[in-house]
Image 1 (cartoon, chains in turn orange, red):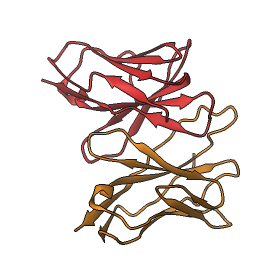
Image 2 (cartoon, one colour):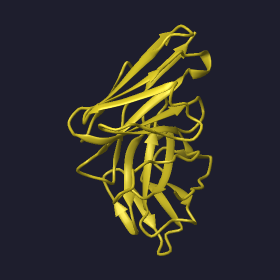
Image 3 (spheres, chains in turn brown, blue):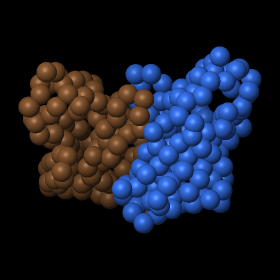
Image 4 (tube, chains in turn orange, cyan):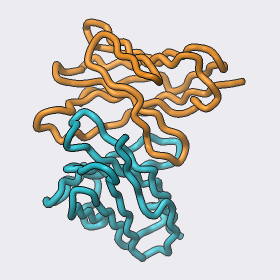
Length: 113
Length: 116
């Protein structure tokens, strides 16, 4: 499973766009990139997943360059409720793989008023 | 969306006793469930992978005789912490992999275990 590197923490203000970048230099051809959000004393919540280029949903956008060695989670106009830990995970989630996820340290996002 | 529940949400037990935590997929069948442990200010650590009808696969360093996992049906997996000690106090989280979508896992709300 590819190892990921993220900033340990980030600060932002309400209304701003936040971009969290994750490095995954050893990503394999069949690996997908998945981002989860976790609030204190809660289980992680799926945010977005992608394989290449750009993926957008109602919550966030995920930008993946052509070499796929990094990815950027973009949260538009954050609010105080977006304060959480964000995890970037890379893994083979299809075919015969068990689908297990190995969590890295995550990025603690603090949104200030 | 897919919902995973855990019971209990928190539990306090005395040292030396055993505690069972349930993980249920409420609206989908989960062929595979995972158990994680999370200590304060730390990331989730995968403990084991549980497949319905077969023995669980434990990660290196996790004692299988201490953390008993049973996955008896496609909607239920249980984790039993046997002979609990204060160092087992942690936040235990399960996740379920939807057999119909192999790309996503859905996490339970977690169970806070405190061993006194």
